[in-house]
Length: 145
Image: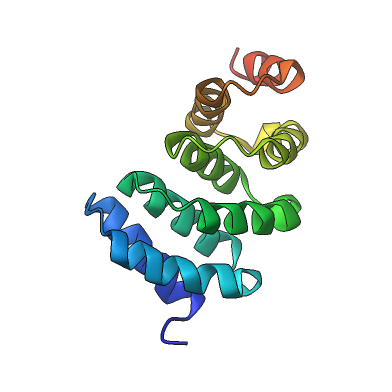
């Protein structure tokens, strides 16, 4: 247990921000994430997903564990968390339909809390993945007017 959740998230986020694709780092940290994903806070999960997406490395087992953790915590997510999560999965080209479905319901429930950038990023992510949710897209369109 060399890394706590915050350390894992910060490492992956930092390497992603610098677009330093380090496969060995992602494998090592990803294995720890998978084993202890239930200990990660929402922001830490967002940083893990975002970092992996920015590095453009395959990390399907890690991203699947993160997706399942997000599904369990989706009601606690704020608009930026929802937007960053959908963006991360779209950028990583991982179509996790259950996660995207849960995100869409939360977007609709919290739409008045969203800024334009978070709404546009979320809409882009759904389009990029080919996940169609007419109710959510209609709510976003109405909110953006």
